[in-house]
Image 1: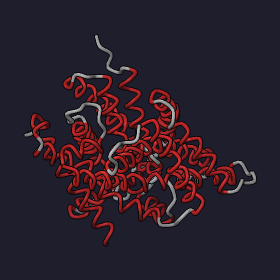
Image 2: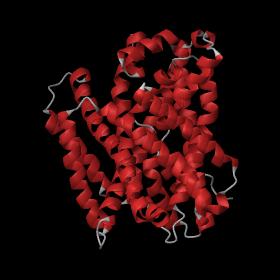
Image 3: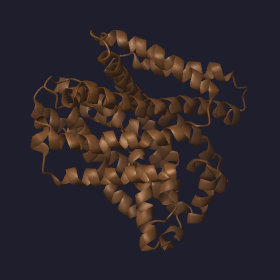
Image 4: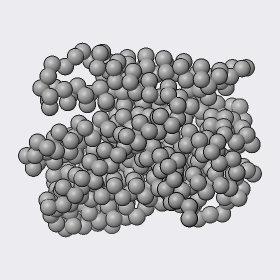
Length: 409
C-alpha cells in the first residue's frame, strides 16, 4: 500500500506550510477574532477549501505548458502572448518582492529586539545584524533544492510544535466571553467580508507554488500522475494550515475577550505580546520573538523562490538569449542581498502600505488568473465545469473587493 505521506510530498507540504505561516500569524487571532467566536466557525469551514482549490488551480496553470517543467513566467507568456506574459510576470514580481523586503526588515527588527530586551546585551549596529541574517538566508537559497527543503523543514517543525503547544497551554484560560458576542446579520457578513483577505494572506503560499509544480513535473513526467501528486501535496498543506493555525486562533480568542482583542488591535502588538502582558507571563514573551523568527525565516524562503522566478522571467523576456539558471541564481542573490540590506538598514515605516498594495495583485494571480485560464486555454479544458472553479472566483472576488475597500476607506 502506497504511503500517504511520501518524503517528497511531505517535504514540499512542510515547505508550503512554512511559506504561508509568516509573522502574520501573530496578528491573525486579533484580526480574525475581534467579532467573537461565531464568525470564526464560518471562516474555518471555508478557509480550507478556499486555500486548497485556489493553489491547486495555480499549480495546474503552471503545469499546463507544452514544455513540461517550465515555471510560471514562461507559462504566462506561452498562454497570454509576449505582452500579456510580460505584464503578468511584472505584476507577479511586484506582488512578491515587496513582501520579501518586509521580511528582511522584520527579521532584523525581531533579532535586534530579542538581543536588547530578552538577552539584555549590547546590540551590534543595524547594518551588521541585517547583513549577517540576510547573507545566511540568501546563501541557503544558493544551495540545491533538497537542502533548501531540509532547512525549511527544520524551521517548520519547531514552529508547528510551538504553535500547537501554545494552543494547548491557553486552554485552562478559556472563558465564555467570545461565545456571548453575537453580531447582527449585517455585522456578521461585514466581518466575513473584511476578514477573508486576512485569511487569504495568512494561508497564502502562492510564491512557492511555481517552484513546487516544476519540482513535481520533474519527478513525475506523466501529467496525470503529476496532477494527482501535487494535489496530494496541496491537500496536506491545507489540512496542516487549518489544523494548526485555526486551533491557535480559536485558543487565543477563547482565552481573551473581544474587548481584549480590540485593545491589542489599538496597541498594534502581536497576540503573543498581548497574552504575555495580559497574563503577566514572561515565558510567552520569550516565545514571541522565537515564533516570529521561525515564521519569518521559513516564509522568507518561499517568497524568495517566487521573487527570483519573477525577476528571472522579467530579465530573460527582455533578452534574445536567456541567462543560464545557475548563473542567474548568483546574479539575483547579489541583487536581493543589496536591495534587502539597504531597506533593512533604512527600516522604512511605509512597509505595511506596500504590503496592502501587493494584496490585490496576489489575489488576482492566485484566484482569478488560473480560473480564467481554465475557461479560455485548451490545455486546461478538462478542468472546466467544476463547482470548485466558481467557488474560487467568488472567494477571490470577495477578497479583492475587501482589499480595495481597505485601501480607500
